[in-house]
Image (cartoon, rainbow, N blue to C red; front, side, top):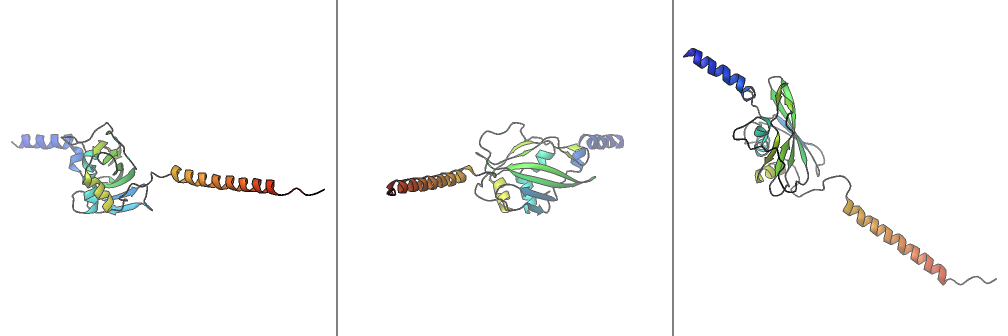
Length: 194
């Protein structure tokens, strides 16, 4: 009986090494459009109840990092528009110190908010993320809004073509109007007598 139990424990330890240390994040930092600075959140990422835990649960942190059954992750990007991207960098404590794992969140994606974690990110020195696409629900957007992500779709960043097109058109119209007025006033002046 003891040999059977020892064999079961040994097989379990070899088959599920990451599960033995399945820890949530201790911190997350978020960057993206509409944020004046990086948002930093710390807390207990293993359970819901605080902002970090709620965000981890809503973003599909655990199934994106550790293989789960059933597996809610997909290797195929969901159909629809993604909208602005927010980068979450998770700090995960482990047996070999802290590891950093990045995940992209799309709270304004249509028809539902989604996250994406690159597969194969190394953590704890030897483990690799499952990665892939995770389709969330309204809790994902609500968790991001609760920590400071804007509630309305911000510009994706970079050059605002619409704004500068209108400014350019207005400037061009002003220059053309001034050129017309100057040309017209020169034509209406009498020529000097010789």
